[in-house]
Image (cartoon, rainbow, N blue to C red):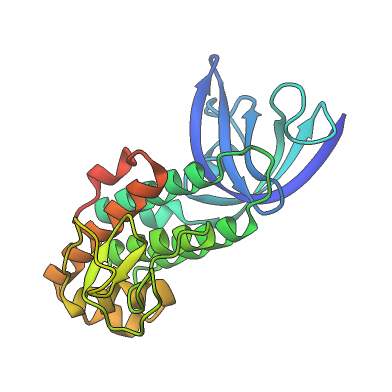
Length: 248
């Protein structure tokens, strides 16, 4: 019997029995964890509202094995709220759909339970904090998160130098399969030619240059979102269910 304590973001919940739930969290020290929360669906539950998607919480787990992926699912025995991001997200459709796509992306990249994914965790916390704050458009926050999530998992796209030969940019052609922009000599069939403004926007989102990103027009944001979505789907090998509901 072992007690663990960690902080994490609630990714998803699933009903279990009459009053329980299975909670899926992305934690700082233990990666993705699924745990049982007893009685949280009862109206008198002390911490049921704390274990909802988007919540940043400090949780104590009770496990039967030596780690969180031992025999059976661990149990959530104590929960404290660190930041209730859901309060500012669920009331706005654009923020809610963008946030849901973030949670699904984080769960897909942290697919191995119990494997530390600290960078993914910190990235998700920062993205939800920015989304809840409302300082930037939800679609920009989502695309920035998706690009950086790809980058921390080894799939960083190039938006300036050629992804194949490294020729200094700017370069014109963009290929999802090649890993970003290409020069004329490295161009492959199926490449597209985004406008320079779109490539500048995507580069700004990847590096955190919000001043440049916020100045971009709606049509450039929409075109950039299409490239981000295509690039993400290529590396995940199947699409995100929640992404189809995002306002573009």
